[in-house]
Image 1 (cartoon, rainbow, N blue to C red):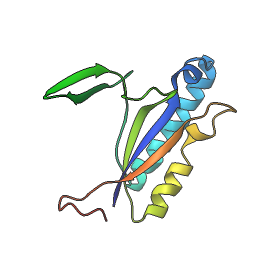
Image 2 (image 1 turned 180 degrees about the horizontal axis):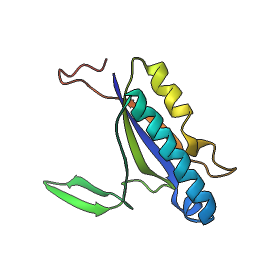
Image 3 (image 1 turned 90 degrees about the vertical axis):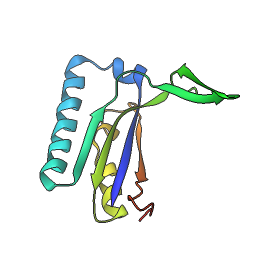
Image 4 (image 1 turned 60 degrees about the vertical axis):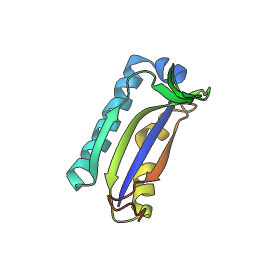
Length: 123
């Protein structure tokens, strides 16, 4: 089963990390990703550039706006797609993500979403 993991963070907090701390965190995340790649569980991983654009209907017209549709201190900074045997394994991977434990007060979190199969099934 494939799972999408949305990695959230606080731009202000992450942007204020000293360069050495940021380099340490990036190294830990790279090593985390490499372990998943080596195990064959990592399907895709990408960082996201700044903010997204939102497209929503305004009457009969799709309208493009800057940023997420909700004001939030945390935003999606990257994502992973893993292919694992169980939800328990997906949650184990999410719990082991280095950014969750990097320094006090850095915050963030991971949402774990099961992906539908091509036939529309959710398992």
